Image 1 (cartoon, rainbow, N blue to C red):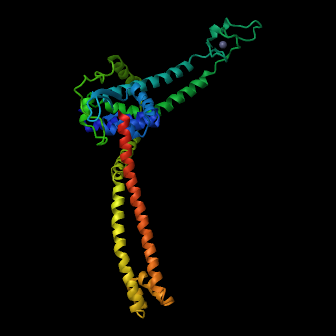
Image 2 (tube, rainbow, N blue to C red):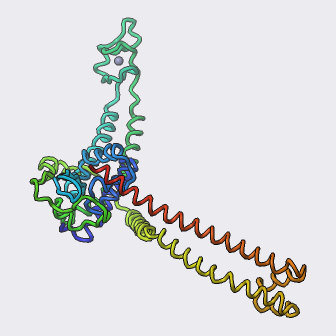
Image 3 (cartoon, protein in one colour):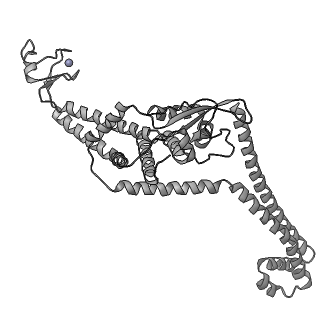
Amino acid sequence: MSLSKESEKEVKHLLRLVTRAFYAVPCALIMEVLLFHSVVYEEDMLKLTCMHRKVFRSYCNRLLEDRLIVAYTQKEDSPQYRMMTTTYFFVRWVEAIDAIKWKIHSLVKMVKDEVDQLSDPQGYVCPSCRTKYSLLDAASLLSEDKASFECSVCGDKLIEDDSGMEAQKGQEKLEKLMSQIEPIIESLKKIDNMKIEDNNFESSLVKAIPVSSSSVASYTVSSKVPRNGKPGGMSQSLQNAAQKSQATVHVSITADDEEMRQERESKEQKSETLKQNALPSWHMESTVGKSLLNGLGQEIPSVKKEATETGIEKPIKREESETDSGGRAGYSGSETAGSDATGPGTADTAEELDALEAYYAQLRANQDAEDEEDDEDLDDAMFEDDME
Ligand SMILES: [Zn+2]
């Protein structure tokens, strides 16, 4: 894909703004995965987003319908199974940008129309069906008692049209909307000045970051069946409409948006690093655990030795040894001071119990780590079964 670094950044920024402003969180999550990985196989997407297929599809369909993402399906040979149909998702930049332009244009137009309608010249309005009448029309609607006007549609008594107030409210609504979508329009304007070349499945694959080594999808263009990822993109008329929307959309510039983006990007980087670090953590824990265990194992006899030395052979040197070797010597010393016969014995038992407890704790930790590993294997197995 021949998207320059700068324009790529801007387009991704735009897509994040839009999905977070107009879509449910899972949609934003799906977009996030695609922006990072470039091309993602459906099954891998389910794994990454932790969604059930049904849920994923309902959210994914919204993005597909709005053309923010595209699906690409092909038949692939897989090592374990017969031919399988694989569906990949990716973002077609040009199409997504046009779709956003269109969406924003429609939204602004809708609110503007509403405001325009409200600010019609004053006259009379029916409180029931909201039909409006000019002063001229109203004259022919005089009621029988000539005290009021009646609606020609529903017969209700007309009241004076005070939509001036509503027009004011509509104007405020429009202003609010414009300020909310300002970052999006700002981004669209920047992108308009950039050269965004069209991409397809093949060119997106070049930039793809592998999702997992255990993926059953090939992440290559299959030679089996001609691809059906629709090329070409948005129709010319839609593109024209989108361009026109630039003229109707009115913007003022702020600097907030740059800061927001930087903040978000630094957050993303952090979470990426976290993800990378998180993967082998069980492994780390278990090795640390083993070395700890080894350390304990070596310590136990030396402690015993010290206890017998300080306790039996050199009982007088107790005070000195306390300062020399700290707690352990002091502990054994106090035991010998209490009783000759049981002193060293209970000391050993206590130490041994402590060590045993530590050993079991360590064993549990290791067991947990191994269980985690087993779970992962199990998941993979289930996943593979699921594929068939
Ligand atoms: Zn009426």
